[in-house]
Length: 540
Image 1 (cartoon, rainbow, N blue to C red):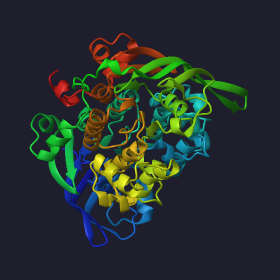
Image 2: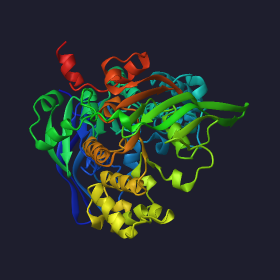
Image 3: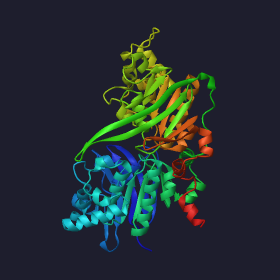
Image 4: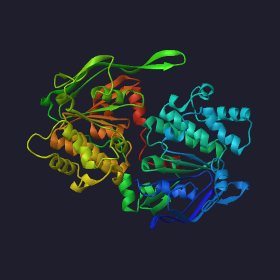
């Protein structure tokens, strides 16, 4: 039996006087994948950062043992290791892929330079040899036109392409262990499926061990052999992935499994069609100018798109990144100007110069609640800001009273009005964002990937909240997402977009029962199945 690639014993992490991670013990075997799952704040990333010597927080103390081995090159204790030792290990024996490749990649360096850095540092390759190796890596991770991409910069790639580059960098020195920390959370389901398959293929070819961190047991089921479930820094279960999925022992594990987005969940209740059409979009066209070294060109972001949204219903708009979903939302809210087309809300034009009373009838909830809320303003101030701007409410109530009502509406205590965004969880911040959007009592609420950045359990609670608010207040939603399982749960009608054009538009029940377009079927096929991959492989 070969030794584990990573052996962690009684790992404890304390910040000041408070212990955050409580005596964790686990091992990662060669060529195997350990999945670590839990909600935000469960200690997933903190555990792996501490175990690999990357934790650098003021007042942090790490005790226990974490040993990385790599065949004939020996074993290294990472807890308490000197910076020189850690620099030798990171990138050489351990590669890292983090959630957001945009912040992980240097925007000032070409892809070639970012890949060759570790090769020159750890393998002492010449610049020419390192460049050849960089080309091989980009080909291995399936990046299109790899020779041209070597000279490209990160901003010239899509999100999925940037993540492929991060994987290439992580694998440059053939590490024994690859740490993947939520690497697909911000990606479309189709791109996520491609990244999952890419990592599995590279693991088969190179024999790399993997630690995959996620909040989604559906994703974990497609990559992991064993699963460690964390809650508040403690291990509540650590078992084979098939056994854990088929027979979860801990209530928290069952909660995570139940929260996974899945197809077949009943959609929202039917709405009386007599409400009429609220939003009518006809022939919408959006082109953005792009200036490059070869001259000026245009990106056709939205190409002749038309649709209607009936009052009190939800239209789901789904597609990959770059399909034009968010551009439509930006046009309707005045953040982008269309090249052609019309859009009316209850018969009134919402493009061009729009009166304030009409503009406030369309509200929007963004994807990331942390960046959409001012960190210097308390939650109550953020909710009250649009009320003061429009001199509301006009029935004699004070803005403070209205803020308390809105917090109650989204199931938050009134005293949360005094908290800053950093004092709230991700789900609580999104509830504040929803309360802020509802402050002006809009006719149309645009939800632009509003649950994509949340844990699956928190996402499930926010989706339930939105459905309740729609039933109680008669709200009309434009629900933008890339996950068809979530769209099915929320939508009465579905619009599928690809490269700026509509490829399918049908009632939700009809579209999910019999999708007509191959692209729609590919989106459905990309949703992780309920059964773990290992279960299907063992069944033959």
